[in-house]
Length: 621
Image (cartoon, rainbow, N blue to C red; front, side, top):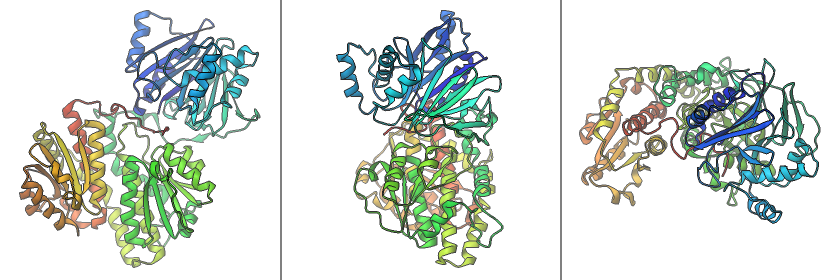
């Protein structure tokens, strides 16, 4: 969640750090800071709020910015409030560090340090690690040895990057769960970061450190050793397909809007990435270990969090319909703490856009201990899920900068549908003709989405009009049935994430079982009701809502006049959607609920791309 950048080389470290941290702003943060080696001393500036505050501090103080070595950080508060005092980097004596993750035994460590006479200045667990390193170096240990010994005293998943005034021109980084990525600067030196985006201006050949790796960065280059043994290891670079141009807004006012508009291409790229079109099965997957795991599965268990959980729910509908294989969908944060019964023949699939979601990874690790086969679905090559799962399918959404997931959700539900089609063909629950027809309709989706998103479309016009009409609403209920139910959950989540509205997603049939007590004037009910087998039941639920004075926003077929007449505001789906299977309508509905939330957030003036309190990659519990 926190953003880390470290640099040593021939360039201006301040420029590299600030630009690198800007590339990590999408992760979400509430304070920032940088530390620079200047004349063999480490100068630190930090502040609560945005990264621009740090730039202003350096300008106002006229601090000489030239330095060839430094570390920077954007903090998402866990231990301690989001204040300047708690911001990173932390300095303890001659040791300076930045940290991502949680030290679980920090209370025990803090008590021991206080007994030794140390006085922590912040409320964070991070600062304590600096005291551990300081004590080891005072006993004569080198920086690398001190870091290794100190890490052996920690419990929990975290990563740190450390410098010391006693060993200038050296940066030491450790990955112990939370990601660290490194790259050689072609002009000499090394860049370290908690994600790959800050490294793209230097090279696409990046090294994802593995769990338990320690990297030593100097002007001459880098060395990677094992944290426990101290032995040098070789880590091969991975070539990223992402480009720095993909990180640009491309003329859009927000990354989120740009990424919504990229969804037609995401579908095409992901299909090309995972499907072998030369086989008889139209959903035939390119050979890889994950295919064998799917072939052997008698039951699937999908584990995920947040938006990925909604994608998994939709996958359950599709996979069970088309293949007949039973599917359980579990919240990773709940599944890992109970005693789940996992039957023989079950394949556990962890779905995570970043591949670093702590709870999902914990489930995969536990399943590995139980010798239950695991599969990952992620958008990030080199992510932890690729190491923790027995096999992984990567989506091809490209870098997603907006904190609220949009195009990665589209890529995830596409993979779920591909699994359904592949297993359906194999299981013979449906005829080969039906599977082929599903595929033929799927490949029409990018074109339909492009039409849907064209400026001037009736759908876009009505979303904007509807949002304007609801400016004084006090809360929202999103309802849907069947395939629309997960989209109702996702629509409510998006509205909470970026517009900070009270919003709930419900299966339409559940509205009368309690939530209807909340329905009165001022509440808005957004109903997802395309013409499918659930449509009539959903419409009947609306009669109960209308009688209680709520505003009704309908999302349905353009010629569904009966539904339209029940609604106060109406968002029509493109008429072409009637030519595809009802199960595919989720691909059409997803941009509608995303854009609804986007324009609502713009109306309220919230920070669309960096919503408060949220992080792009939730690497802590």
